[in-house]
Image 1: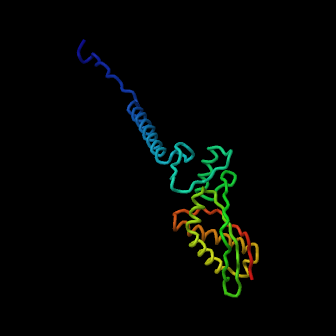
Image 2: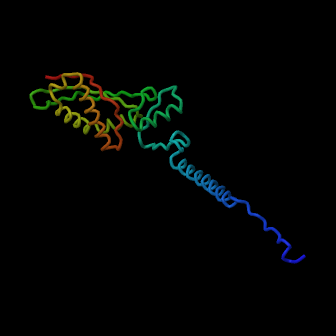
Image 3: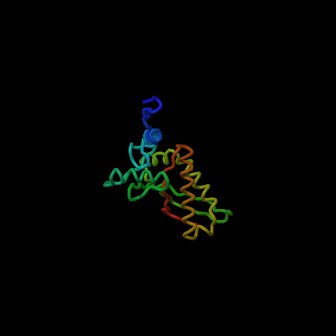
Length: 198
């Protein structure tokens, strides 16, 4: 036989898509490893991936802390603390402390022809540090309360809605003083223990 008639040995055929499969596997591995690293980083930074647990939040011992009611589970307390950061503390989870303020507050009302005399009490869901701050800054708080009363409209405060609005203004004034002096307000509500206008 001539050399021309002998067929050359067949070259091994390459599998189609073999390189593509290897690249796909490597890409998936990279995504899994990279995603796991990113999730781990988020977990380490925030305490959890979805913000719902994991590491306990760090508590600053120098700041007032919410007082948890007896019988409330630690999970409910943690959830209540998280919600309190975005709004008012839940009275079903946290215990309120009430504090009467010494003496009455007397002020002329807006326009100067009428006056008001009120007794006040406050409440807080935080520990004794808030009440201690209230006592420490009593003079500044009394001044803020009197200034707030002097801006009240004599006709408006005769209505229930006017009294409620005045309570909110007084709460804001008291929390403003505490925040300016201590970096934290903590007064949840203001109560009238007496209310006289003339």
